[in-house]
Length: 173
Image (cartoon, rainbow, N blue to C red):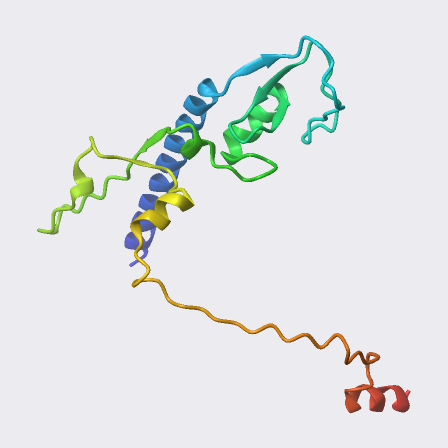
């Protein structure tokens, strides 16, 4: 049993490491697609890099993401390699720059079930954008959620006025 446990643990760890490696390589590929811009003149507004909190000045080299946010390239490059999304709006750079990550190969040697993903030439995007999810799902398959918002702003009470246990605690002190 112990040997089986360690084998399973090792398989899970190596699979996780392989996935991290693939995602890291995809992030590096996405970084090459993000343009570097040299600031030649003072911007009309004082814009600052939200990572280092320093003002973007003339002569700085910045990266401008698809979402429009700008950062110093030496600040945002390590961030994007580790997190793979914009620090401000969480835009996924792999999906935004259409960088494909090789799908995980699910090989089962002792099974007769063949998966389409066993083909190493099959690729998928790392994440699916919300618009793509909305296009694929039909309204009939989505659950309907309804809610009523009740405005009780005219019925304002002081904390403890409603709860008799709160008053009992104060009296026992």
